[in-house]
Picture (tube, rainbow, N blue to C red):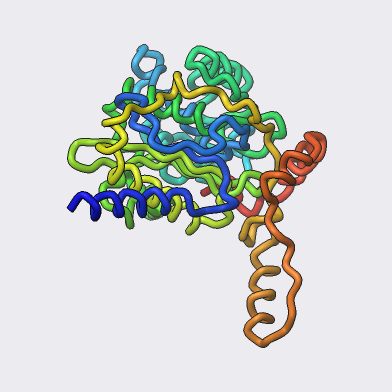
Length: 352
């Protein structure tokens, strides 16, 4: 019996470790801060729409402090209307309630709703971004900087898996009344039904949140929460090459955690604040050429390559960047690539 249990635990660990070229990842218990798995947790990464977790947190604070209410109506400004997809797309001057805007922010990942909420909280988008950064400092997010409220591409907008774990912990701890927003599978605006990009809510037993993110430079990111038998775990996954691989790796990590938690607790675990900082932590670099997305112009190239392989033709496919090549790349190149990412946002690459 003990041998079978050990084999099961080793298998679960192997599942979590299997993606050889995967981006940063962190699996933790938000109630205790205990870490069950960590990989490149201090490497900087472009957050994409995971920045909206901070936006939502500051809106929750404003409601708690009496500055806003869920029933308040907020207006679409010209700046909000100018945001790239994904967005609700209401015309300038239209209004929606704070509650509806929060649903649009979290479920639809609407970039215009993020700006509307930012302006409602702080009076201007610029002032709200300053508040985001001040809050990041207060929460100990030492390797994070925000440049906007929605996660659209900006070369200096970066975070880490550890910092996102810190942010997620306070969202769960301080605002449990809004847990239903993170677990909504869909929302409705008039006759429109908008589905959540977090596929785990529909496919993984116990999944109950939180948020996905995607731009060409970051790849597919997710902060995924699940609860089983009263235990809640959160997986942070950054830089997967497709939406399906993002969901698959998050599910594998969560499964690993639920199987291994009791075993690991017997020997003690590092916590978010006690895990040593990675001495070789890297700055953010674009991975757009490794991902599979029509929005980034990479899906067709890979589809053609697959078709040629089926016909028996020899195909040269550009390999993914490995750890060593990421170390050698120049930071200036990353900034240039991030700027290019902004040009392709009309394809909705910050939506997911």
